[in-house]
Length: 130
Image 1 (cartoon, one colour):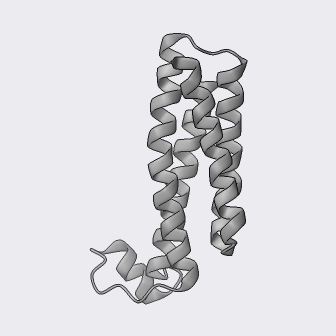
Image 2 (cartoon, rainbow, N blue to C red):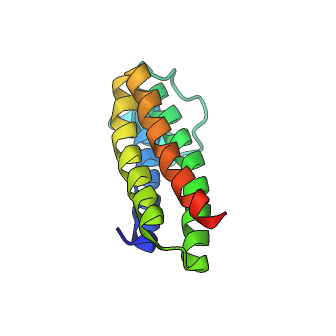
């Protein structure tokens, strides 16, 4: 998997997770929700359980994307593009792809395991740089 392409894919995945969380929080499929979504988001309705999970998943995805982007771009800049880095990039990316729907579904232990797998990918990238 190409490191720079995967950074771009992660940016898209992160953006989509933020959009879904926003739409769910505002209930953007309703007329009132669309008004809230296109406005300043004042007086938002109470979040549903799914909207809350989507918001937390999006926040976690954004937080982890920052770490991933820093490590992946540093690895690319340093020319550290060996199999360890490539495997770390793939592990991180696919774990994050799985993480979001698992979090939406509210599966607590599996969510934590999938998150930990993504961290293994980050550690693999970082260890190639150190």
